Structure formats: C-alpha cells, structure tokens
Length: 360
Image 1 (cartoon, rainbow, N blue to C red):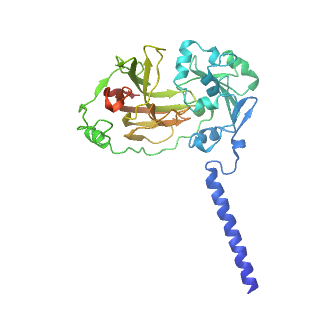
Image 2 (cartoon, rainbow, N blue to C red; image 1 turned 120 degrees about the vertical axis):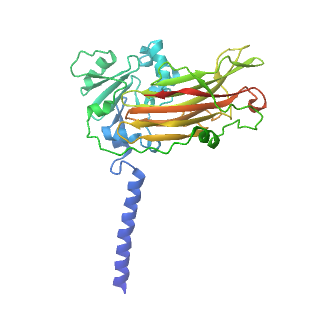
Image 3 (tube, one colour; image 1 turned 90 degrees about the horizontal axis):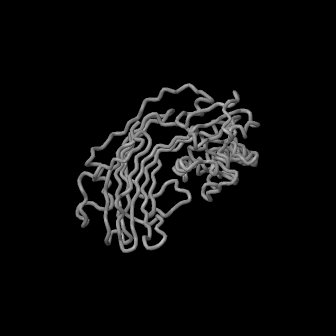
C-alpha cells in the first residue's frame, strides 16, 4: 500500500512539474527560453535587441515587456532637449516630421542620438533626411551621426523601405488573403451612430461633408475645423488625422481626433480640451508585407497607445497597425464626429465630416 502511494505521489509530482513548465512558457509568450535581459538590454547607452526576430516579436505584444530605463529619444523629445541630441540637430522641418511620431513606440526604443542595435546591426534613424543608416561596425557611430555615407561599411535605406527584410531576407510564405465582409455605407453609420444620431436634437447629415486636405494622399490626410468656434474669450477647434508612418524599422497606421481650445484674451496658445462626444468611424483594409489582408469596419472613442496618456476626452486615437514590417496596400476611410465648445452638448457647435482616404 505504501508503494502505491509513493508511486502516485511520483506521478503527481511529474504532472505538476509539466504543468508549471507549460504555464511558464505560456507566460513568456514569444520568448519561452529567454529572459527580458536576453531579449533586450542597454549597451553603452543604446538599447540592443538580441536578434531581428526578437525585435519583430516585441511588437506582437509590447505591453508584456518592460523597456529598460535609459536616455531614450522619447524622454529627450518630451523635454525638447537640444544639447548633444538628435533633436538639437534637426531643422524645423525635421522637428515637425519627428513630432508626428511623438507618442510612437519607436521613440521609446531609440537612444538620444536616434540609434538602436538589432542583432549585429547598429541602426541610425535620420528624421531629417528620412533615411536609415546601418552598419555592423559599431565604431562608426559618429560617422552615422555626421552623415558620412562614403564609408563602404555603411548602408543607407529610405524610410519607406522594409529594412529588416533587406538585412535578413526570408522566404515569403504563401498565405491566402483574408478579406472580411464589408458592410454597406448606411449599415456602417447605423451600427456606429456616434454622438449625434437623428432625433438627438442636432441635425446630423445623412452624408458627412468630405474634407480634402491631403498633402500626401498616399501617406497622410488631415483637417482642422475652420474658422475656430468662438465662446466668450475662448476659441475651439478639432484636428482630425489618418496617417501611415514609415521609419524603416517601424511602421504605424492610425486614425486620430483631438479637441483644443485657446484663450484669445490670454496666452492665445492652443491646448488640449476635453470633449466626451468624439468618435471615429473607420473602414477599409490594409496589407502588411508579411501577413494577410486585414479588413476594418468599426468605431472608436478612446485613446490607444497614447504616451503620455491624455484623458480619453481630449484625444482619441486608434492604431490599426504598429510593427516592424511595412504595409504594401492601404485603403483607410474615416468619419470624424464631436462637439466644439467648453459646454459640449449643452451649447456650441457639433461637427461631422469625412476625410479623404489614405490609399496606396
């Protein structure tokens, strides 16, 4: 009898060990045999990912990992530090381009000079020229900063290029494209009525006004309500955007809506102002370089991926794609809705318009 109990305990012990190992692997996600320190660590003030695969896998669920504390470009940019930083070396045009990435994950990964190490490669993202400079010779760091591109050990890639694919080509796996069933235009509006549906007291047009303000229709479309809505000494405006951002090793597709106000009798500077009525209705599809087609059809009223995180009533943002691989096809449409004014639905001016789509 004692032998039977001993054997049962032995079996249960083995089973328990297997279950613990299984749970451990599941918790580690994509890195079952690696600690976070092995996946990414700080070397000489620069963040290093152990391999290209580790860097790519990081974007599958970046919230799982704690990025090591270091002097990142995100910290530099938030303080607008100009001494011995990439921000200080940018022209006004370069700084304006960088501002589009202000809440992007990539700025948390780059060092103060705009560099990162992935595997054996030292990579410098030049937001002025919109190119990435790459070398295996880490002693050429200053050459990258000085834009010394004559050295044969340095390779240059445009921001639109899929850099990691060029550095470590992989055979493309044939995957059948998946396209979701697209609802009709009227069904989309009915399923996502927004803040001012018919009967709410405000007249919502059946077809939203189409705003055409796309300097780069294959990359970015934005619109600022004009003229500003006046309420006493305050003016209010909304800024709507959908944009495809490319930075060689980082690609993001997002829709965004911001509500702002300024005191015309005071500082006259635009700042964030809450509007709980803001909604983005979006639809379309996009094709990642190494994945099937993704179809979109929904609405959004909160702030995803915002850093530092504003309250959801000041800004809403929907990130459709954020990864290390570029998009080869985009068809992004959006209807933006909200209410200008400090009293919101009690007074003021509702707005309801559609942006020109981003198509590439």
